[in-house]
Image (cartoon, rainbow, N blue to C red):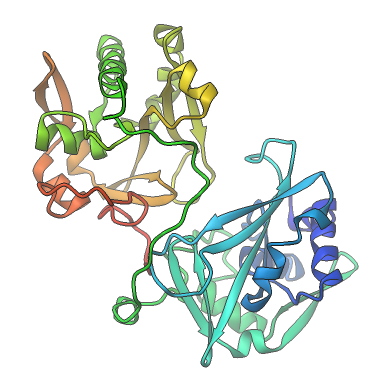
Length: 397
């Protein structure tokens, strides 16, 4: 759906009506603004599949109370501020308006981002990246006409796009990632003086810990079954993340964890999905896709679950993370974070003995764990894979 069609949708019209009826100022921003400028200048610029709108931060608390005004067809979804920093006052970085019934991965969503004026800058958080820009771009607004309608946009629009997307913003093949390439991301020197704060996330299904009841033994059985199926069918895999950490450090799964982690080459995911009947009926497997310029494909992870925990929405599962070779790195997405490591860890694998099996692990495993966890031999129960992982490529948190 191109930008003209996005701006003609009912969900976009409903959002504008909500903002105008409640006297909430707004402006089109981010990749939506880029797409509009591309359309105006007859450039085939890449665009977001969603619409991005910004509002002054002081109106955000009021906005969060207005869900009943958008009608039963739509709903609100809040995106947690994952920066781990006291950069802005809200625990949320976006409010998303989306359809209530259709697949939320395939339908248009409206992202509303609060931006807070602090001294001579405006601040905001992009998932986990702290950002700021000179207030001159948001103190006043220009108007842009497209499709017979007029919309507010940041003043000095082309200059603003150069700040956000670089001087090459008119390039149709621009590979821009907001949490890596945006020059509004604050640098480490500034972040050193910003206090830490707890990350709030209420969007996950109910978690258990492996030490609860018989979950530990059941996870071990499910993990070994998955490994046996992959070995039997000749698929490359390796223990990864917390599962690798626990077995390397303690010889067992981490007691306070709730899942297990394996890595697989992304180009084998479709073939692995064909093995679903080897998992059935005790386990179900399902793939999860993602659209991001960070990856050359859309496969993010294959999840192995039990039917019972799936019905009860308990977060008890195995993740098979799909990794892509890109130049001298392998890339993947985990916990909403863009991650990468050197190819030397996955190109050739090592092995260890566990539970009577020879199991694949990354090459240079201790070095790998140091990269991911720092001092990995000391247990850290408050470790957050979306915030503390040394493999995260994103900046500004």
